[in-house]
Length: 414
Image 1 (cartoon, rainbow, N blue to C red):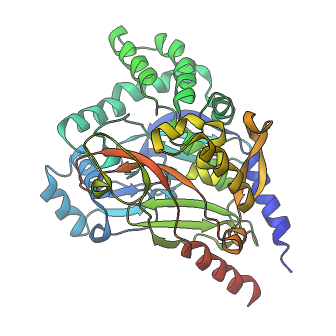
Image 2: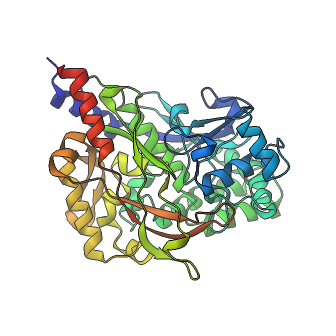
Image 3: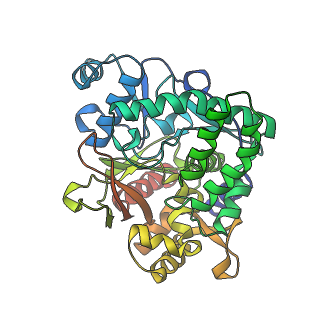
C-alpha cells in the first residue's frame, strides 16, 4: 500500500533542502542534456509550429536568425515546418526560460547545481525589459543585444562567478524576499543583490574597463537580472522532488502561450495539459486586453517551488505592476496555504511573523477545494515582434489537476 502522505513529505523535504548554487555560464549545446544543433527548446508543454502563439513563433524565428540558420521570417518558417528544426520543452532538458523560453544551441546558459542532491538546472540570459526575444521580438536591435549577452557579458559574469566560487541562489532569494521581492514578477531587490555580489569580481576580471562598466551597469539597471538564475534554482529544487512514487505533489507548471501543462512527482514525465488563461492586469500605455496573448512561460517554476504569487505577502508593492491591492497580495498567499503541503523552511514572510511560504501544491487539495494555484506574470503581445504589453494575474485550467488526479487513481488504485 502506497503511503502518499509520507511520499509527499519526502518530496517537499527534498525541495526545501535543495541548495542551488549558480556555478558558471556555459554554451547550451555543451551542457544541456540532449541539446543538439537542430533543436530549439521552448517554454511550456510540447507544441508544434502550427499551434504556437505569436510570441513563441517570433522567438523561434529570432533564435534561428541568431544561429545563422535563417535570414528572415520565411526561411525560418520553412526550416521548422519542413522538419529540419525540432521543438522540445525546456523542462524535458532540465532547463527553464521565461516567457517564450526559447533556447538555442549556441546560447549561453546559467549552470545551477543543487549541491544537496546533485541535480543540475539551466536557464538562458535575461535581456531586460522592452522588445526582447522572450516576448517574440526579433529585430536587429534584439539580435544585437543577444550577441552581446552571449558574448562579452557572459564571459565577464562567468569570470566573476569563477572567482567567487559560485553564488548561493537559495540564500540570496531568501534575503530578497525580506526586501520586498516575491521572486517571479518582482526581483528588484534580488537583482540589486546579484549585481552587488558580481560587480567587484567583474571589475577585477579580464576585459576592457568600458566593457566591464557596461556589464555592471546592465546588471544594476535590469530589475530582472536575477530572474533567470532564480528560475534555474527553482527548477533544481523542484526536480529534486520529482519521481517519488505515490506523491501527489506538482513538480512542473509551465505555459507555451497556447497550453499550460503540469507534471506530478508520482506520475513520471507525463504532461497534463489544458488551455492557458488570459491574464487580468495592467497594460502599458497604448495597449489593451485586445493586444494580449494568453499566458506564457516557464517562470511558474517559481510558484511550483513556493515563491512567486505564493509569496505575494512579502511583496505588496507588486500590485502597482500587476494590478490589485496590498490586501490582495496578502490574501493570495493565505489562500495558497490551503492547497499546499508545508511551509518553506528557507523562504519566510516577515509580515506573517516569518511564517514559511506555502510550498508543495497537492493536486488532491486543488481538486477537492476548487482552489487553483495563483500565477502572477508578464503579458506578451499576441503578435510576434512587438514584445511585452503589461503584467497581471492568471489561473491555470482546472482540468489539468482533475486529469492528473484521475491518472493517479488509475495508476495507484485500479
